[in-house]
Every structure is written in C-alpha cells, then in structure tokens.
Image (cartoon, rainbow over all chains, first blue to last red; front, top):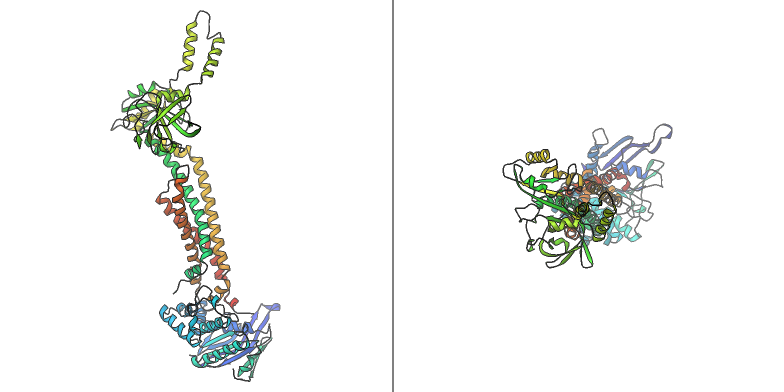
Length: 235
Length: 401
C-alpha cells in the first residue's frame, strides 16, 4: 500500500458559495514517493495550511483526487470515523510547536497513538522506546514534556508522528522554533526516518536554513502549486 | 489504554485536590443540613417514644401539647383511666424555658411527671445513664446530659431550686432542647403559679371589686383568692392501652365521651413532622437545592476551565485520531473523580463536625448513598458543557495557519 506514497491530482478547495466563494486551492497536483522528503513553500495565505489539512484528512477538498498508497481517499465511502482512523494509522503529524500532551510522560506521549489503535500497552511502549532510542531521546523516556529542551521535545514529536509507521508524515514548520544546528538535526532525522521506514514526508516551511536540503520543492501561491528541483544539499 | 483523565489529574493534582476539598466542604455542609432535618424528625420521634404513651389527650381543638399550648384539668385523667382499653393515664406538663444553674442558664423543656414509676407511668424517663429516678414529691430533677448538668447540681426553675438526682440521654423536645424532669406538682407551679407580687396585686384588685368582695360575704373573697393561686391544670394526659385494644377506637371513645381532643401515635407524628418542623424542613430543602446548584456550578466551572486549558491538546488528540468518546470519557472521568474526592471530604467533614453542632445531626447511610448518587449526577451534568466544547474542537486547530 505504501508503495505509491501520496498523490493528489487536480485537488481544489473552495470556501463559501457564489459571489463570496474563495478558492484556497486550485487544481493542485503533488506526488511524494515513499522514502522521499519534499518541501512545501509559500507565503502566508498562499494555501499551505489548507493543503496540509486536505492532505491530513482534516478537511475535505471540494474537488480532485487523493491517493494514499493504492487507496483513493475522499470518495463517497469515507465517514468521519474512517478519516479519524486514517489519521491515526496512516498519517503522521509533526507540528511547528511539538504540542506534546503535557500530562503524559515522553514514552506515553509516543505510545498513545498505538494504544489508540488498540495495540497492547506493553507493545506500544516498547515500540515507543525503540523509536525514542533511534531519535536519541530514550534517556528522557520518563520525563514530562515540560522537563525537555526544545530540541528534545521536537524529537519526541517526530517519534510520535512515526510510531504507527505511517506511509505519510506531514510536518508543519517543524524547525521554526529551533536554531540552525537543531533545525538541521531535525531534517537529518526526518530524512533518515523516511529512508528507514519508506515514509513519504512533506515538510511545510518558511525556514531558509533548511530549504536548500530538499531535492524537490513544491511552491504554492494563491492556491496553485508548481514543482521545482531543490538543491539537495547535505544536512 | 492509559487513563488520560487519571494522568491529567496527577499532572494538576494540586488544583484538583484543593477544588475537591472546597467542593467537599460544600458537600459536607449539604450532608449536615440533611442530617439536621433527619435529626429534627428523630427528635420528634424520640419525644414520642420517650413519653411512653399510646394516646395524647389534650385541650379540645388544639394541636397540643407539643405543637400548640393545651390546658386541661388535672382530674380528667381519673375518668380517662376508667375508659375501656385504657391501661395507664398520667398527667404531664411541658414547658420550654431557660433553666438556670448559678449565673448561667440552659434552654430546656421542663417536663412534669405524675407520681408513679418508670416503664409503667407514661411520661417518665425510660432509662438513666447515671443517678436515680425522682423519689421525692418536690425539688428533685432528672436532666438530660445535653443540658450539661451534673449529678448534685442545683437548678433554679422559676422560684424553686432543684437537685439533679439522675441523668438521662437523648431525651429532647421536638426542637432538640434537652429535657429536665421534675415532679408534676412542681411543674404545674412552674408553669401556672404567678410570682408573689402578681398574686398580691391580684388580691388587691379582687378586694377592690365589689362584685367579689360583698359586704357580709367574706367567704367569697377567700374562695376567689384561693382559686387565683390554685394550679389544677396540666398540658396533656398521656395514655397507654391495654393489649389488644385499638388506639383509634379508644381515642374515638375518649373524644366522644370526654369531649377532648385525642391523638394517636401516628397522628402525633404527623403533627410533629408534618406541621411543627414543616417550615424548617422547607427551609432546609431550599438550602439543599441552593447548595446542589452551587456545587454543580463549581464542578462545571472547574471542569470547564480544565477543559479550556487543554483545547490545544484536545485538538492534537483529535487530529491524531483519538475517538470522541475517549475525549468525552476523559472529561467525564475527571468530573466524577472531582465528585468522588468532594464526597469523601464532605462525608468525613460531616461525620466529624456533626457532634459539634448544638442541634442533633443524624447522618444516615441512606442519605449518604443518595448524596453520593446526587453528587455523581451533578458531576455528570456539570461535565456536559465541557464535553460539548471539547467535541466541537476542530482538529484543524492543531495545524497552524
């Protein structure tokens, strides 16, 4: 299923009706292959967030087609609970701020997702600890989010996005609050994880430091995307 | 699945515990209020139990002797004693007053008991916790321990002094005032005999009244003066029945032939509970309703604010695929946990504070269970607003822009 990554074709999103209708997305096309990390860049109000919400199965597009793996999303057969399960099992999210659950420790923050998918608690925690180890924050496994540094919190958030081994990860400004060194570390981790887990990763960013690291970039302006090759610099 | 509610409670335990304690004190007050009502009902029942009577014969068309004043002649008990089905009939007086001991005084119900013996003559204290029963015709008293009097203490009731010879327990009036038992003659004087100055003034007025002080008929003045200081009245005649006789039938017979008002135990209980403490019961009921509303408002507010503090986390939870029922359960469990903490604190505080209250507070398990269920219901209702807000949170809020 993950073989095809994520693909959207002629995806449009309109807010409002008639004279007041505004098209936030206009026939957008995008494809991210498994193991690939692409950048999504655009000014404020360009439609980035709307596109991210459509990709994340949070809002439904007005028209177009989205394929996740071999499965078409947003045809008539998708209920709210189906979309919720899709977000839980097959889409990982990494946010600008880590948004860790403040009342859960690091392990449980990561293990919560598999637990929500009815994975036994011990298995979920084991999976979480493995990922925390891979992201070099296992030593903080029992810490509360408020006890972590910004970089550690972001790594835990990445672990949470990856823990269910989703075929797609949507990262919304993941390096915004970080300095150059930590931002590069996050990009390095995302690329490693993309390769390790065959995950398609879309990184929405304004961050000039990390834009040169992408091999492929989608620019979005006024709801329209165009693709261009990136520099693919070492990170 | 881990308990999100439990983890959140542990995370903000200070806020939770202090709110729970505050709520608990409110619940404690509510339980005490309910206990106060139960205590008033129990006081009324205890009053009836302790009188040992099956019937109360009182002045016609009154709700005496406890709910209204009643005055009947003290020789009526003899004719009642002769009625079919009557085993014992004894005069009794009841007077709520300040009983003095040295410089201090205590509000008490002074009960005049007819000569006889405990367990046989109605009106006598059924048991003592110290000392002995009254054995002399004058100036001895048996007091409830709640008066604070000790054996050998000297009490002043009106113009006379009494020695406490016995102590009893849970002998109270329907309003919770402890009883002091004295001999009937003393009690009649205490209730009806005027002070010497008043008697002297009355005699002067009588002597000045030519209708009562006719020349050549000096015996009339002597008779009138004697009548003015006579105290041939009591408040009620307490009646016990012979086995196998119906209280209603005997009561009806006394009503018909003696032209007096008679109450059975059920009727007297109805008067005490349904009329005498009805206003207090309504008052307490109003307080209970207000306290329930305040408790609900506190729970609703704290759960609402806890939920509003977590709006972003709830959006994240929804975005990553948490079911609505998991989020609703988290809020509901927190509300219920708050209620359980509050109830535990309330129950403990009510239990320990009940004996301190001057009036009898009767905490019964049934009220505690009802209170617990009410607290849970209030918490569930109070959490609905927060649940509604949480379920309306858009998962898109977790994504910027």
